[in-house]
Length: 504
Image (cartoon, one colour):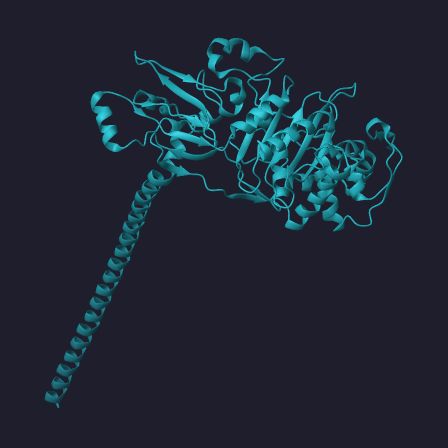
């Protein structure tokens, strides 16, 4: 019995030892698994951190490649980048030429190595080409990088650098037509104002005149009086920076708002009696003319103030504001140098201000270029093309370095809305306030305007429009300060531009 008891005890001990060994092994196994799990967790963290920094590094390398290939010239070409001026130590500033081959700006190099920037057309291109003395403006500023960059044949560049001579900068071929610019300049005469002409299907700016002007050839010696002359503001480019009440050209905006609210011009009827009074505020048609019974087309063609003043009170300030901002009022324009047009009417505006604003008076201010862009969108089926001045850049042997491709900036209205506004503008030429453009060898559409600017009823003369209504060729926007009605001063300038375009 004792032997059996001892044997059982030994078996029990062995089982307990085996059990303890097994439990110890399991604990060790669990501990090892836990350590392995912690190691894997740490490895994942290290892997994630390493991958994160690798991604950042690759992203930086990718951005540097992209910046160097696509964006560096944009930053270098900034007018605020003074580094560009150092390029002139090794490059002779290139030419600016018109699209019809005329030299608009060049650099003459003399025997002693001195250089002089020369503008063969003197005052005619003053604002749009600008100047390269006492700072930069116009195309001289916009194309500064291209003008100070040389794409001469590389062996010639190496030779010139070896000899310590400068390379010739690239030539900027502008979209401007010297013939149209000259006609616009002469047509404006000695009056203050601005003329803009552009191609609606591409956005090419064909002409841009502003007066009073200056001679960029003598800018340095005349600088002090030019910057202090507040009467004429000769350095101001009125085409892009001028701010004027739009007068009756704003009825284009009103017509679009009416069409959007009603879906048609059909059924509109208004009896014009020469004046209309609402809330003790009176609006008169020009010279108190009584137009009688009108539909929408005749009210627009007659530029009937009474009809549009009363129309504005029905449309309301909020609706007119929305349509105006759709046409880029209070918005940035797609230009390098411009001033925002201002429109203040809103849903809280009173009846008198709505009436005034509806005929292009009130607080509304707009630039000639902005009105040209709106008109361009109408002529191009509602799509505004990006306006531009640089057509090509070529090297000094004529090889093309770069070409600007036309691109759409924004759709401002539907194709149908543009077509309906175009019909209204055709009526202005056929039997309205711009009949001087009717019966020519080309068709035309447009809108005149007389924008009052003082208490004596003095007015600026406006015209916006385009030629060849079936397939528009050229858009013009013209303002003559103090010129009276649109038909008196602005329309004759438009006529000269259209004639020059088609007949030379």
